[in-house]
Image 1 (cartoon, chains in turn brown, orange):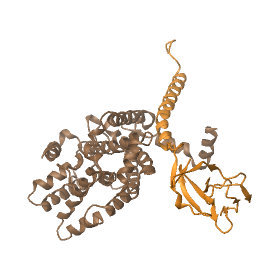
Image 2 (spheres, rainbow over the protein chains, first blue to last red):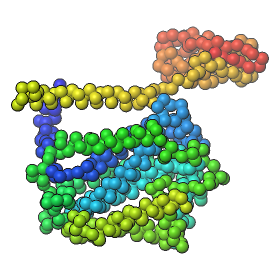
Image 3 (spheres, each protein chain N blue to C red):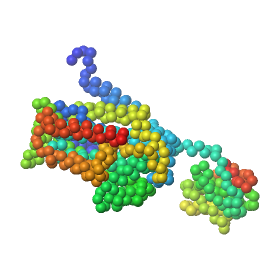
Image 4 (cartoon, rainbow over the protein chains, first blue to last red):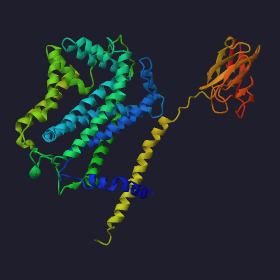
Length: 364
Length: 144
């Protein structure tokens, strides 16, 4: 039956050829490593976020009077609601971890270099969209934590000269976080950002497939980052088939990530759902020591380090712009980390600085 | 090939069956919470009694209420005589309307008509409206 259906499709669309070209006929570098599978892990995690997000939408009510109660109902009354909600909340944090690892591995292996500038740029925008999804989703439970974290996060935009206060009001839809904020964050979280994310993921995958997978820059197989005058798909004759060989390795990584997700969801969800998240929002009582989520701590602390918020915001903007445009700035052909001491030094120090500032922000 | 080694086609079949089995078990494990999450929740109100102030139901009039998650209607055809019926038409599930002038129910969807006791007076409904217990407790009507 299945064979007949495939035959039917094959005659019309040539699906067998398409499948063969993109699976067993698609050869990837023989020395490809596990870090290359993080993109697939992200796809799986985003897929799970979409699924759990849709399920949460069935019971969630985007109304300041009812939002917290609806989340309480999901967690306490709906069968397995706790599982769906915690998978969604923990999953969002895990996605940020994997996004960071993916970016760090691409940076370390110099895979962002030409001809993969657009792959990097689209990936960097995807990273920011992921953070945007986290920020907008954080408010939706309308808890003390989400309310005040959003207040602090949106307040940062007030440092922009001249239009700052107007910008904050525009972000919130009101002078302070309230029903209009919930409405626009809800629309962003469930429609606008996921739509943009899906489109950009498609473009990112297109870039990856069209350019070809880069060879890991280790050993004698390492290749310099070059681009010719005409388009050239990077082929890997003598490589291993994408399916089943590399797919099996990717599946193992996906299973590992899912195991981590399930373990945290079952045994330690409080890591990402602290006590302040269990109290309904009270616009008149700010909880003590309110802190943003761990992935925004560096930005939060940067704003505090600099004498003025504007300089802090400008520093953040400069860093993000630098990272976005890195392939256009770092135009060297060398990809081997051992041959790029300056880059590796900056990479390690930058990473330590980011971790240090985040820890400082957490305990300041 | 050593004698005790399976041919690769048999190994492949074995692995496929193993993976399919594992996939089915994992799929079922994921599907069960999903099914339970999506299933209607037990409202726990199967035996719930609903109270209503007596003066809400005028003589010859009708009051529509929510009874155990479904629309119901309370009538007072004669002073002190109360009737509680489901307001869901037995034809296709539309909500019946009370026609005060005719002292009967009319289903707006396909013209089904019911008496004050829920009996079918005309139209396509196949059976009468379900009735519920109702009693007067002081100035409160207790339904269910």
